[in-house]
Image (cartoon, rainbow, N blue to C red):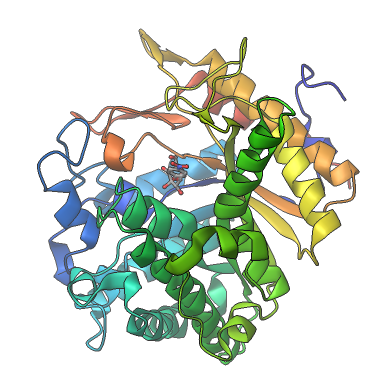
Length: 443
Ligand code: PNW
């Protein structure tokens, strides 16, 4: 199968989960309605200088009001699954204690709406919108936040139960620790590596505690978590470039997957971090490494590194995010994980691209997004042929939405969002995905 041949639906099992993905803060809007509390992303996006176009997500796609017609569009696309997230401050406005029933009501309607349309709900509990009162107490750098998270997880699963096909505890703990507490590009916008590593450990601990709490509910739902990975290549075989690549792979990929799947932090990275390593209590790694029903893998790009930093690849294609298009990296990562770890079944829980859309009359032309989607579906198929147990693929994203620190300047959707009218229009990529999903499956 060459990368230039479009993938076929029949290359994947009949029950393979095909879906799109979104996150609550990026699509919902309605930030002050029905008792929702304030999240760190409300605070951050209203802080001057934090968002590229000085926008916020107070309205964004208005999905909170338009969820029914959005689910109709999704059903028309032909997907059998949808990955979405629950906004913690809708459920617990203060992050602990008092539960807001109206918040749970919204997600119950959404989940039932999916089931009525033949769409399996893949729910993420934490996609970055921490209740602000918990941040005021230190956020993820405070170990108590892990306990709060497990309580919140129990509240959500207590209401929605086994109607949800899959619960993911966290989305991308690298982003909610390193990108948020060390690099400072995401909320809360700190630059403190020690705090970042403490946050990373408490996120993993929160995952473990939430897993224990959800296991106790005896649901039929699949329980797992979602990590983001980058494919890392040294620019040359010079020892200093190879060492730099090993550290980036270590801090970005292995620091998160190894505690989960092997019960230990990677030794070389632990040494690299020196005095900034987190405080690990006895029993933490046992909680963190309890069995997962699946691992969610988010993949967008690779990084080519030298000892002096990152370097562009001559002749390669880049997206509007400045991310190299490198589908082989997805196959490589999946086959490597299968080789190196006891790997549970995998879902590709995010993969997608930001490109400039060409709006022409009623049509939206985005040939590069279609090519990206096709080449990455082929990359998933190649990993499956190499023996990796991949159970599903979710395209980021269902519709253009609030792209965090980039505001509305980057469009990842299969649907074009007109933020003035809230009209959604299928892009050519969405129409291609629909034709793919409607191809016959093998029995
Ligand atoms: C992911 N990085 O974010 C998120 O899960 C989505 O909410 C987001 O919209 C999507 O990817 C596209 O960006 C990331 O800097 C943000 O490496 C930044 C990075 C990785 C993932």
